[in-house]
Length: 111
Image 1: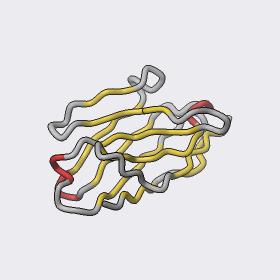
Image 2: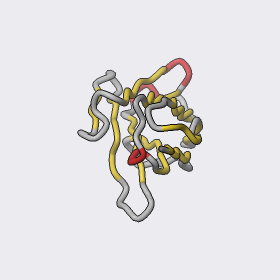
Image 3: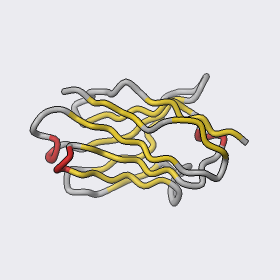
Image 4: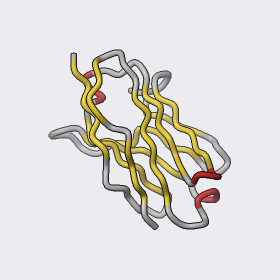
């Protein structure tokens, strides 16, 4: 399994970004997916998860601002990030339930 994340970049506080993660393989639709992030000097943390049935969960810090979704026809999971804050600055990783990790995409939020 390979996970290819993209969509990171530099954005001003209050702005939006959408991250994408394309998975290889034919079993994507039956696999739970998640987004983690790691900020400089901090531990990696779960941002959002989505089950194979589409149930979602979020970290308290992003609830109401971020939305995780999936398109099984495209083997892709998304993370829509709105109302971004400086503290959202981190490398974002997609991961599947079997603990395969993508390479990470950097999100930098400026004031």
